[in-house]
Structure formats: C-alpha cells, structure tokens
Length: 225
Length: 384
Image (cartoon, rainbow over all chains, first blue to last red; front, side):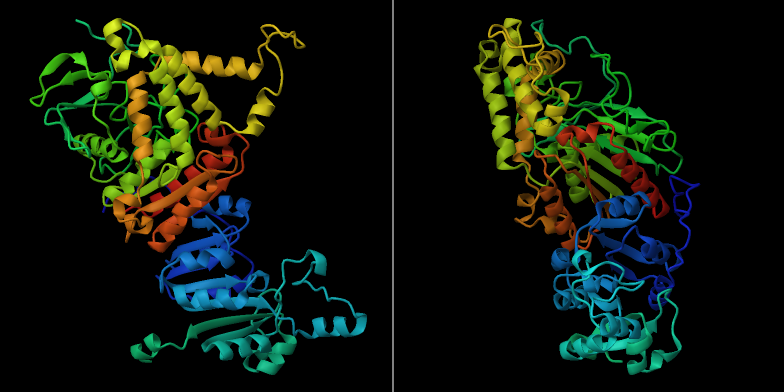
C-alpha cells in the first residue's frame, strides 16, 4: 500500500464537540458505515464519525460559510438543503441518514423523513421537544410563544417552523409505518435522562428527542430479524 | 521554409514528449506523431503517489507556476500552485500539459502538418487541423501520464475548460484518478456559451488577414479578428459588479466627455486585453479549442444520463463554483453535483461568494484556496 502523499497529515485536530447529543448519535452508528448527515453544520458530527467510527461520511449543509469550513477540514460536504436535494440520491445509498436538530426547520418534515428512509437503511433524528414542561408552562402562564434555551428565537425570526412533541413524533412514525428501534429523551446538554423509558415522562421532561428509525418494508422483512 | 513567419509563438522551445505512434481522434483522423508539451513542478515520490495533473483553460498553457516565457508574466495559477500554496509543490508533483490543439508546443494548428506516415509536409496544419474534443485532449494527457510512469494521479484539477477535462478524466479513466477538482465548469457547454464563442470565431473569419485560415502564407496574423474574439470573451469572464468596481464610467481621456475621441476606461482595458492576447495566441488554435468546448457534453457521451458517466465512480470529487459566474453558473455545478449524488459518488460542493465573475477561479480567493487545500488534505488521509 503506497504511503499517503501527505505522510505527516493527521486528523483535522478539531476539538471534539461538547454537544453530547452528537456523542449519543455517534454511538448509534456502527463502525465502518456509510453515513449522510443532513444539516451537518461545520461537520462536527461528521468529523467524529469519520475519525472515530471509520465511517464513509457525507454531509449536506445550507449555510455556505459552514460548508466551506467543513470542506476545508477535508470532509465530503455539499451545499444543499434537505427539502430539495435528497430526491437526487439513489435508494439505500447509506446505512444511516442523520438529521440532527433540523427536522423542525424543514418545509416538509414528513417528506424529508420518507426520503431519509428511502436513501438510508436507518434514520437518526433529533429534535427539540415542544412538549417539555417549561414550554407548556410558559405558554400557559404568559400566553406568548415560549422561548427556551433550545428554542431561543422569537416566533417571527425562528427557522423552526414545524415544531412537535415526542408524542407527536411517535404518532407520525406509527402513521408512516416506521419502526422506532431506539429512542432517548435528552436534556439540553444532550445527556440521557432517567425517565427515558417512559414516553409520557419523556414528553414532559426531555428537552430533545433522539430516534433511530427503520422502515417497515417488504425488503426489510425479507432480510429477517 | 514558409514556416509561419508571423507566428507569435515562434522561436520558443517547449519541454515536449513525442509519441511517434500518434493518436486517433474522436473525428476518426489519426495524427502522428503526437507532441505533448508540458511542465512539471516538485518531485515525484518513490511510490509515485503524489502526482497532480493541472488542466488549463481555453487560452491557458502549461506554464502554471512560473514566469511565462513569452509574456514575462507570473504563471497563470501561481496563487494556487507553488511552494507552500494550496497545491503545494513541496509535497506534490504537479504536471501541466498544453492541450492538444493548443499553440504552446503540443500538436496543434501551428505545428508542422504531417501525413499518415508521420512525415512532415513543411507547412503548419493551420485551418486543416482536424477537429478535436475534450476527450481527445484527455487521451493525449493520458499518454504523457503513462510515459511519466504514473499509475494513478492523486488529483486532477482544472477550471473552466480545464474543469471539463477534469470531468472527462474522472469519467473516462476512473481507476487512474484518485480525486478530482472541477472548478467553475459544467458537464456541457451551454447554448449561451456556444453563442459567445461563435461571435469570436466570426470575428476571426471576418478579418481580411485571416486568408481562409492560411494567414501564414501571407506572413500576417488576423490580429484584429482575434482581438475582438478575446474582447468579447473577456466580458463573459467578468461580472457587471466587477466591471463597475474596476472601471465604472471613468474616462481614460480626461475628466469629462468631449464628444470627440473619448475613451472609457473599460474600452481601453478591453483593447489592451485584445492586443496583448494576439501576441501569444494563434487564431486557428482559438478556433479549434473553442469548438472542442462547444462539442463537450458529458451526458450525451453516456446515453443522455450524466449520472451514468460517473456510475460507481471511486473518485472523490470537489466541485467549486463562484456566485457571480454567469458563464458557468452555480446552477450548472449543482446539476453536476446532483448527478454525482445519483451515482452515489463521494462529492464535496462549495459555491464561493465572489463578485469577480468566472475569472474568480484565477484570482486571489481565500475561500477557494482553503477549500482546495482542505480537500487535498482530507483526500490524502484516505489515499489508496
């Protein structure tokens, strides 16, 4: 095997993220997988996946400055967005398609999920839980759109146009025929929370939901379990 | 001999590889011998794993990263290629060849015409040079890469027509290319671009000194026609914003209009571009190469499907466009990226914000440099 032309090159040296939810996502990905990270930002998660999970990682990001930063780190990232660019990928091109804290900002979340499970065998989705008690409390007490640490922008200036609760998301998965293989309630810092086994408690106390989905399709059942 | 007395590039000796068996072109004509003029920078490592091929654009040449022997100007991509530059010649062995059909030493209209046996006919090919394609150019480059003993190029990089060659390389010889950086380019030449080229060609044909393409017989060159072609083309390389910023409505001739012999700065600039160009470029070469670009349509070469051109490609791509480029607009790069995604290829894509138009790929664009250098580093980690 020939030596790398840049033999002294090392990993990009980016400090590992303290966003623990990215850690939790990375742990869900089996080493050596093909992964697409939608809304990958500057590539923090991709960097972890590529360097620690040996993944063949690709990313899509809508913010051009972040794309340039990611590509300049040597990551395979394209400028594009979840609503319009997923349709161009072939079926089952990836083992995992990841959408971290972005679903609520897409124009057609249901269609994006369907595309994710078309082009990937599994989908990993995280989103802010609008059912969190503080959100409910603020709306009840103030009568105004609630703002929290996760949802920190006023209603007229937020990219989050399709907010949902953990309960809503479970319902959508059922309606669309997706199997929830794993799920976690996560707090703001991305730590797993103790009531993660109970949907109703998680819907009240988790600041984010993190889901690993597969599609109930004939192709999958024929593979056996 | 009648050898082009007025040939602007006469008397220059270029480093050249000669292939006596020649090359069969897409048009069916076989030319022999084949001359490929080239330059290299840096040192090929023992594993021969650090070679990067740079492909030049329409009016570029092999003098990428050194003072040009004819114009005395810095190399055309000296900002990108050189010691410590994004394409670092202290790490990489950089090769650039003058394209087939060019006029800086490779076989082209201003080199001596040969018969089927390779015998020289004592006159340049001129207007009788057969039509060539981007694919022909790439096949000629492959001969050079073979002769240099390089099994796999670490990267192929090029902008504009150079980017077309990059795409053709990746599509034709996917096992010979590890990574590809097509910049400010497209998978086909658009109707608008063909239209602009045609204006240039018509200007050359209309010059009385063109003499049906046999101008060397008269000891002249169609300088005015070629200059107009260059002026038209040059406008397409810029943007309205860049023109306004550089020249605005300023006059060369004084502070205000006199309504006699007024010269706007932008006119003066274009005239300068035209007149310097004819001193280094051959008109028949210009006709041949613009035509090669017009012919280019990668999807058409693959049954109408661009994704098919890259099916199962192992090549890592980094596609770059510039926001103000209206000659090869971002939409065309995005089309290419979508086809690469459909082919499940490994692709990065960056649109760089710049007001400098198509020319931006040759200029000081820090985001371009960061992108190229980062992509090459990332690719190097995964070289195999």
